[in-house]
Length: 421
Ligand SMILES: Nc1ncnc2c1ncn2[C@@H]1O[C@H](COP(=O)(O)OP(=O)(O)OP(=O)(O)O)[C@@H](O)[C@H]1O
Ligand SMILES: [Mg+2]
Image (tube, rainbow, N blue to C red; front, side, top):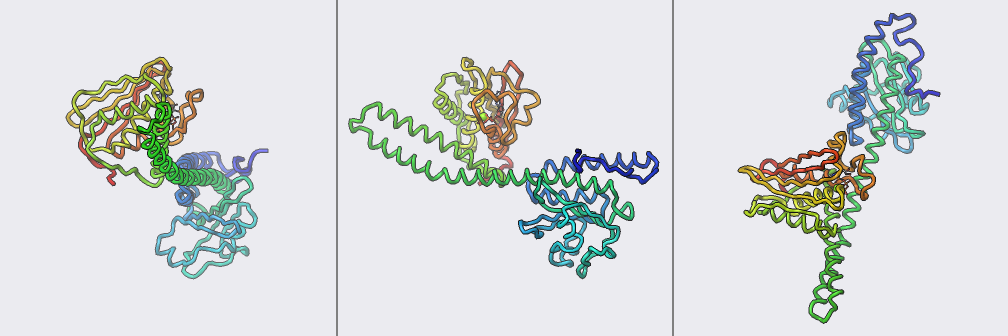
């Protein structure tokens, strides 16, 4: 059976015998504003923005003077009420948000769409509080996800007719379905961000303690007749822990980014040293000598965040090593002009599908071709881009299937607008 949300209204929207041309022009306008609305809802990232967008969009798509979205708590009471069409003074004059009686409550209790031509004379209505602007026509639909009712969408005062009709009810229901998906997405992403920041934060302390313990073991093992194999093991352990703490820093940066831009801690840095440190790191973790460097002989000094830039370059090198054949070299070079320095990392791997080349910079996005390769979180390039833009720089990618990929980082030599600590 078709779902009521996608099933078009049975009655002719323009009324029985209405000329087709009337419907066509309405349908045309509706499709335009509706697809805009869905686009906006699909890009709403937080619960607050989904609710605000939905209230605002519903007003314009349904030609209503007022729009509102109620979010319910687990006891079925209204926990949040977001309105559109009322200014701050009007909202303040009305006072407390509605408690969900009357027509609002009737939608909540029945879990079904409800329409009224005139709120004041409707027997189900509970009357307006003092200072409430007069409202006549009413349409309310539940926002549902599976069996769970997330809230309700309401519009009042149709501006292009006396009352809301079948088409309006159908449009409101489909909008509510899209909003339910957006609410679920926002809830998931909030849960993921919370998990990330807790995980990164909680990992930091034990990793720090491990690091101190290994440092102290290495000091004690030095010069006391400790077998060289044990000393080598401790050295490897220390490097492994360093690697782990960098991963934790990456996670912390991602969780910081969900709350705003990344801060940078500048000091005077030679970019060649940053690149060399990143190369040493991946040579060690990948146990490889595939990386070929082409670094200038003169220093390239600027005021940058050494640790973060090193992580950005290491992320690019890791990708190049990971997504190209084991017997192919990976190349890193640095060039400098009067105003900027460019780091380039190049591989001769399978390349990146043109349809993926923008998407992979998003958090948790992986290429369609990376399934066979090592498991990854899809965070590397996102972190690279955020670190670089926090320095006022930019990233670029060129990739050709079967030829290879080049990713570059360009940094201004002197700080411009960027996020300082
Ligand atoms: N040099 C490259 N060659 C081919 N594909 C690449 C290259 N660099 C990145 N990609 C593609 O871009 C995707 C995103 O890269 P990104 O570094 O953000 O995440 P990841 O490598 O999958 O995981 P993570 O870096 O978090 O471990 C990869 O999954 C891969 O499909
Ligand atoms: Mg990666």
